Length: 363
Ligand SMILES: Cc1cc2nc3c(=O)[nH]c(=O)nc-3n(C[C@H](O)[C@H](O)[C@H](O)COP(=O)(O)OP(=O)(O)OC[C@H]3O[C@@H](n4cnc5c(N)ncnc54)[C@H](O)[C@@H]3O)c2cc1C
Image (cartoon, rainbow, N blue to C red; front, side, top):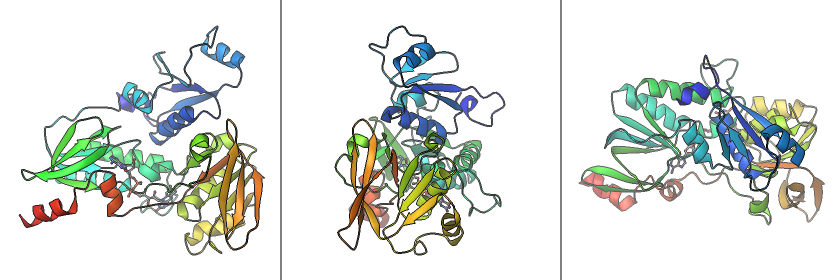
């Protein structure tokens, strides 16, 4: 069922999403649909009259926002991501009682592992807690991936990989998260967040990175309301005429800057280092430095967030002096890769404690 909603299908059915501009729930659903290559229309409603007209309701009391309208006309009021994924047919139950390989995380690493494992005839299950594609699914363009000389949209790359994996028989379980693994009876048993258990002969933990938080006051309140982590390809078209900020100096931040610059009036990149060269590919830094509406501020960091219902301004501080100033902006996006080591894998639950792993290897 899920394929009929995905871009590129012969009879794609369009989902409609109604909501308010700075609503964090609407942003989460937009981001998920975009990363999952689901064709959707975003209908932004600013006044009560808009809502009544577009939704055909006479009264907005007791209406939970946002509203997702499925192609058959069913409406979901204030749904969770899982509700939406479920209704699109993305959420399924495992078919087998145990697998040769269970893979946690369906970013590029997990998708590759799934394709290779299943193509060798191993029964393979791929478990993803959110959207297929991981970080790669959030970027508008990947240019250094072999086989795509013109570059490829990250969501499209992930969708091709998903199709390839499914073709080889990989079972994809979405909206599922590994929370704790243990070894016994020569198998690895992983507890899933929904209370289920996955049993396999081997686990692959391809859970990527967590974005590092800014750790600033107001961050939680403004998250999804002008403050975002990651690239968020779904948001770029909504930045028309805005002055937006990107925090970070790596390739992912660079890709996000170039994509946002197609829509925003200006994009300012806030970089902690004194140059881009240390952390960014040359082809990308050349483009950033050549873009007329992109500005790079070096040796700075974001030190404050301020706003009521949504972000209104950010504070930018020098890293070497006490100088700091507030800049008005409706959007700031942080792309600061965080922890990727074994600690993260264990916190994410799909790597068993080391002593168990050692016992298993030697036993
Ligand atoms: C904006 C942007 C642009 C980029 N551009 C480029 C580029 O042009 N070229 C390039 O080479 N690289 C690029 N990158 C980097 C590239 O996307 C990453 O290196 C790559 O995605 C890492 O793949 P991964 O599979 O290891 O991890 P991720 O992509 O981080 O995927 C990890 C997945 O695991 C899932 N997960 C985490 N924990 C669990 C759990 N417990 N259970 C189930 N699932 C879990 C996550 O939801 C996620 O989907 C870019 C990144 C970004 C953000």
